[in-house]
Structures are given as C-alpha cells and as structure tokens.
Image 1 (cartoon, rainbow, N blue to C red):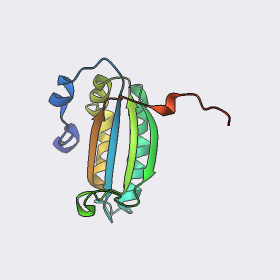
Image 2: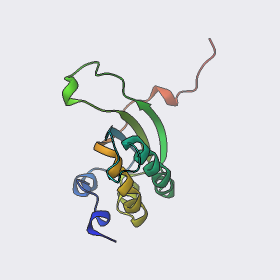
Image 3: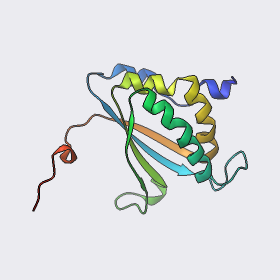
Image 4: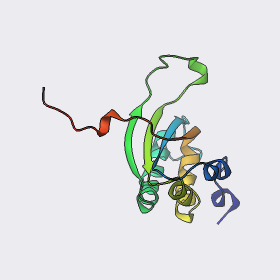
Length: 141
C-alpha cells in the first residue's frame, strides 16, 4: 500500500480521541467536487459515486449509517465564496472510536483514492446531538 493510501490527509484523530465517547456521533460531510476526476475517469461526481459504493461497506462494518444526503443549492446566510459546497451528508456512528476505526482501516484507504479523485474539498465535522425532533414519532393531523 502506498503512503498516499495508508494515511488520510488531515484526519484529526488526536482531537476526536480527546472528546467524550459516551454517545453516538453524527458526522457532517461537506463536499465540493472536481469538474473532472483526477484519474480522468469521468467527473468528480462520478468518482464520488465510486467512493460511496466502496465506503458504505466500511461505514456499515463499524455500525455506521447514512442518515441524510442532499445537494447544496445556495448559501442562504454567509459569504458564498467561503461556503462553496456541492453535496452534504450526515453519517451516524455508534462512537467516535468506530469512526476512527473506519477512517484508519485498509478498506477505507482503498476507497479514499476515489474520494481524493472526486473531491476538490471535503470537510467532516463531528457533531454531538443536543436536540432532534426527527426522533419523535409523527402524529396524524
């Protein structure tokens, strides 16, 4: 395995490990795609779809699940040039430890090549839930 696949650039294991790990964690993923995949195999979106097909196995292996995804349409508040994102995903893991295990696995390193091919920028923010109306059972009106 090459050095490029062995380490995920900018993965902040130290910061994540310093946080309490007593509850599930949701990871907010913000992605901006390249016009063309770095390997020349389609668009950045095409490479991201290849990444997703590989990464979902590693996510599920650690007990994670994709909660929600959506296409970013416009910056409603903020400076547009500072917030140019194409796609957003919420991925929930049973713990920060399980997220770190996924991100540092050999299987994820292989999938990460496609993420790098497709994403010009990708930020993942760890979120500790403080409120969630969606977990309340819907009522009939």
